[in-house]
Image (cartoon, rainbow, N blue to C red; front, side):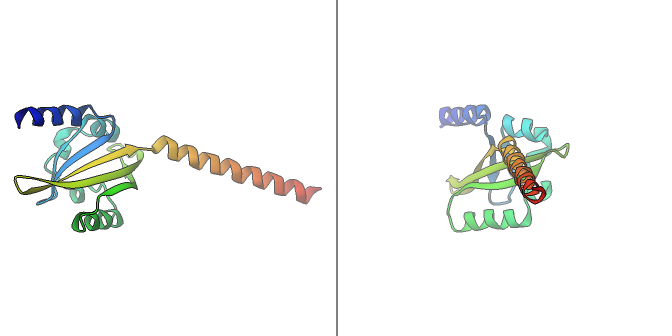
Length: 143
């Protein structure tokens, strides 16, 4: 069991995706990986032992969807969330999570894929299309 724990811990910390390990009994963060800390600009001591409610990471709607997923035992996959880093930067992510038990204690593991750049590019592309459509419509009116 010790070997499996060490392998899990190494994989957890090395993942390029933001990862969270949470105790479902009290909702406290047990651990977060380096990608989480780097992306959201927090120190581990500011996160571990606190809940999502205390940290304000999720909107009430997001919390409701997450709680429903947990209660219904349906894994949540690629649910889009928007959070703010410690410095206020917007981070858009796709959240996936699953519950599991160790020695009959419930836990939640969450993986968040950072899609901030992709999302901003989509918004920029949409704005360019809107501007292009505006320009085309304006040319039609002037002709």
